[in-house]
Image (cartoon, rainbow, N blue to C red; front, top):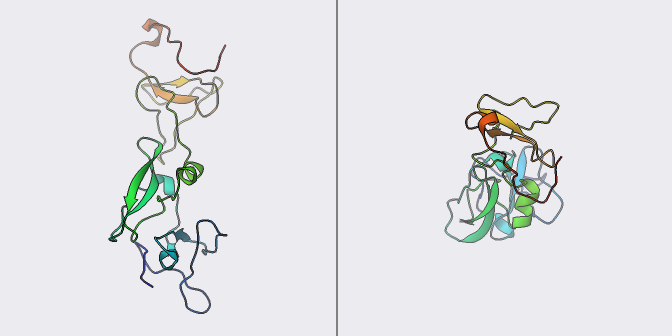
Length: 173
């Protein structure tokens, strides 16, 4: 069995054999490992380096086969397709769109212009009417839900701007 892991050796069991895992079965990978799902069962092993897949870049791999997969595009905050080559990828590699969306929820950008402010660790800055703190040059966009109440870029003086009704099916008072 070839090593499909980008960094380090796959986890082994008590018998010294690589641990074979599956996206559909129970998680058998030890702490600090993740299930690399390859083109076949021999390439589906527990690889070292378990971390948040949503912050990793897409990694096409270094193999010679073509496997259609999904990854989370952190810049666009959406799942997208890519071609995986079977070896040397990372955890930002999902077999289905559903699996990608479950691990990395997509964001429908509530800001009319620009992207919401982010914290240093890449999380979107939330705000509320009671706590409207946002960085300089951002304002608190009060949305219909907590997820859509974010710090949006401000352009110019808000009191001199025309009223913008917005889009969506919620009715906010």
